[in-house]
Picture 1 (cartoon, rainbow, N blue to C red):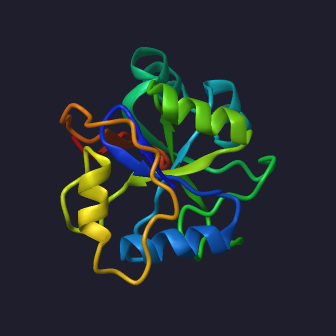
Picture 2 (cartoon, rainbow, N blue to C red):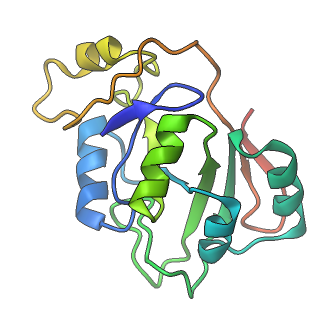
Length: 177
């Protein structure tokens, strides 16, 4: 499903369903070595799934919800297994990109679903991020697979993608600024 976020249109699926995640990767034509992030409904929900450190707490307090992705390790006792890639199976150490979107559509979807959902731009891999339903349709018109549903929220303001910071190894690594 394609839906609006605060940065661009994104694609969502059940991040706890490896078949749904595999389909998402086929739709985007994305390498299964490039994980997607998890959209959480709240910091409290994210804390049930991810191992937090002091820096993650500071950044979350200052910038979330908003266009920031924090990469953190998945808790071994998380309520559900998450699949940031189609092949993210134990015992592989799994890290997950945490996203909290302030966009009401994105927030409503994840809150109503009750568990984390995927979040990644609704474009074919390597093409520009889409800011309207028309741009999504144009990118996928000649493909065998495409998003099943597009929730049209009109044309979004063009914004930069989220900043990504990897905190999973104890250091702070800027992945995308």
